[in-house]
Image (cartoon, rainbow, N blue to C red; front, side):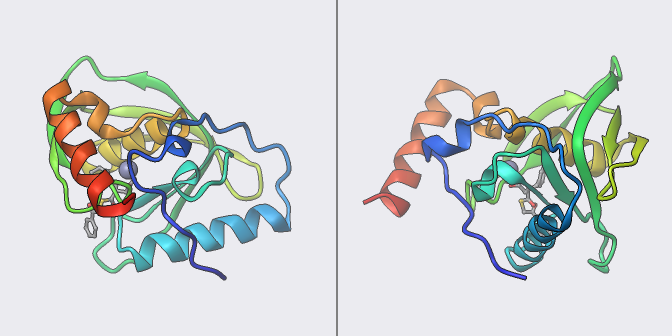
Length: 166
Ligand code: K1U
Ligand code: ZN
C-alpha cells in the first residue's frame, strides 16, 4: 500500500472529470487500497480518486467512529434525490482547515459497483448522504467551495495559493 499525494485547491487537476472503471482487476484493488490508506492517514471520512490524480470513478468512504467500515463505490450514479434539502458544515481534504455550510438534497439513492464489479444500490441520509454527494462532485471536477459566494471563494483561493503554491 502507498500514501498518495492529495491535490490542494486551486490545483487545476482537481477540475478534471474522471472516466468509468472498466476493469475490475488487481490494479483497481491496489488503487482502492492506496486511496483507503490515504483517507485514513489524512484523516478524512471520504476521498475521491480525482483528489489523488487518479482519473477514474472511484470513491472510498468511512464514516464510522471505529474507522473500520470502509465503503467503496465504483462508477457511482445518483438515481434518486429527495425534494428536501439540508445544510451541513463540510470540509475537504483538498481545502485543508476550511469548513463551510453547503445545502444539498437530504437523502440520495446511489447505484454503484463494488470492487468485484457487482452492482448494488444504497439509500443514504445524514453524513453519508453528504459525503457521497461531496465525493461524486469531485469525480466531475467540482470542489465544494464552488457552492460558496464568489467573494468567499476568492478569499479561500488566495489563502490556499499563499500556503501551497508560492
Ligand atoms: O472529499 C474530501 O475531501 C473528504 C472530506 C469529506 C467530507 C467531510 C465533511 C462533509 C462532507 C465531505 C473529509 O473527510 S474532510 C475531514 C473531515 O471532515 C473529518 C476528518 C476526520 C474525522 C471526521 C471528519
Ligand atoms: Zn473534498
